[in-house]
Image 1: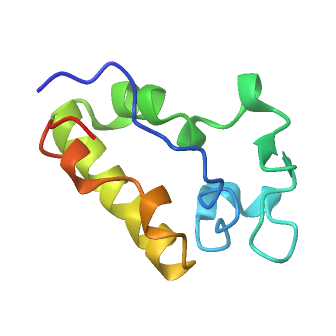
Image 2: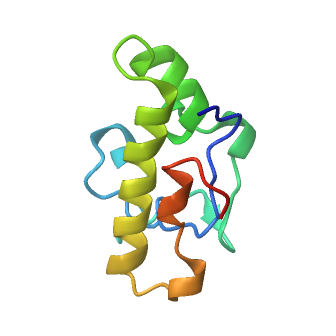
Length: 104
């Protein structure tokens, strides 16, 4: 399976739940939301931290121990967990079939 980009559906939940991510503590507004998230968009998108850049993070940190598919699978599972825990409508939840390489 080939991936060109991570299939983000731009729900913003990863930016609203940073309270337990050590690398992002300085960006926590005190509620677990990133101080750079405004109207569900990143105001520093082009200069966001490495941990917020799925593909760059893979290349620089994980490519020597995981395939890109495995890395994306782990991230899709984490996204889905955030979406389920935050009661996102089922039709808006990142589909599991993206893990298997099927069409959404």
